Image (cartoon, rainbow, N blue to C red; front, side, top):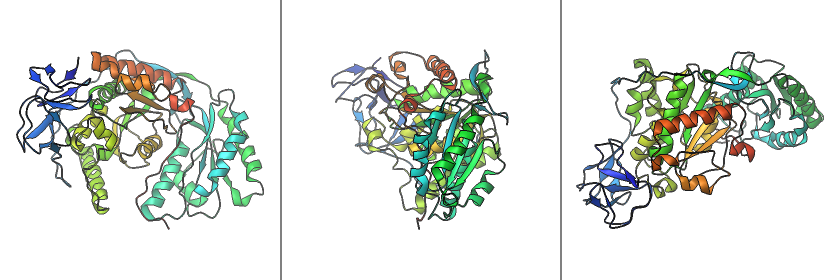
Length: 489
């Protein structure tokens, strides 16, 4: 199979492998070479006429495009503009049935939440103590034994010289990471003179278990390494009491993200994640979709799947507020596809977004949560956050995702604090970057069905939730990035 017409109304097809000039597909002869993942016109498209993909407009023709032509940024432009008014037009969602109830081998926490890792995390409240946190991790690796699976820190440059919403975002994000169930023990590491005071941080954190969360203010002790080692030993003793046991799959919270996308993202990997999401929700589990700018142009598909008018209104606010964020910084709202996206075949933001939202499957949207907030409702949740890979993956972790599914057509080595499963859109990437990629959705381009790939991914997630390490875990690629929009003092 060399090409696919995704929807019967589409006036373009997508090349599943490179098309050569003179090849005939679906009765149309290619007038020029078309790279893999790119589009070819199935019929003549007049100047100003919409280009249709996924059954929706992805932009309009800048000039007459003869049938058989390569359709891309040189002859197509977005239709999108600024803020919009939306009308709730609820669409029917299929009834998701679970079939066999699945389990994974994880850790149960005293508060009733499940975990898929049992690690000790050091959370710096300010960038000034990053090097202290890193040395504490290096010096105390002997604590990683028994059921304690790792000792990590997640450094960042903030916690001081911030104001307003930026200061609030840093405080909320770091506190949310402290609550994450994959951390069996947490050391909160402060300097002592930063804007993000320990009192502020503890107020944001709320109630905590003194056995699980310890605090160290470096300026208050003579030797922060000696004191830190003592606290980490206590945390390891506490975390070491937890062991893996069978837990219903419905306890899982899974984040969904894409990056380094290509023209096959919306054909192979993203629909596979969507099929997985439906399977997970049918088990009673939770999935989280973020990257708000990559919903622009496809947002109505999500809005019309909102469970009720209240959730619809929250989705509208999330979309328009993020557009206003762009506008307030004098930035163009719809110039989102990166050079790599375009090289891979994505032409406009509509093209990118219509592929991106397929990760949400077909389930109803049950809630919309803000940046650094945590999920409370099982089912498909929308999370406020940017498209940036590191920032949005960090936000997914803070929202409570045990595991993140990251689809990519071009590849990336990074990992979030939560295990990050890289899903290749094509066979070439999967075979080329074995040290980055965990799962291959490329066989869909060769005839595998999306439901079969979704089931294959579900089975893989159960393995990763039960302790199998991702490539990014094995290579030590784990970091955070905090959303920042304002002034640095």
